[in-house]
Picture (tube, rainbow, N blue to C red):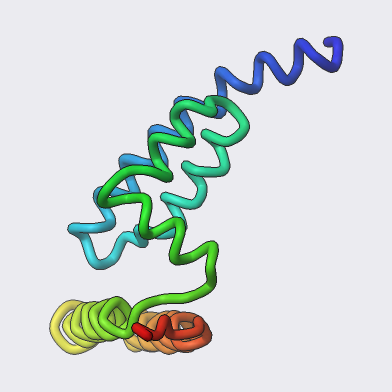
Length: 129
């Protein structure tokens, strides 16, 4: 397959995967266990490679664009950090104490919660100067 034909074909593969990733990212807004930002970042990357119009739409979207822009700037608002960590720990503790019986599942959930907490705390906090 010639080089240019390969990239043309990939555009048609990236676009539907980008929309699937976008759907999962939007679902993640409402489901605390599903991450929003990674799926939106994946959508942005796939749209960038397949459809400049979809990429611009996503970046300029009133609700979804800020997730991507904030992440690209490596800053998160204090409110967003507190909300994310609160939901993370509320969900994790609920699973650890009320849903999981196996000790290995409880340990896995606790380690994921600690890892995500450290990851979220590593972002610079946006200052409202």
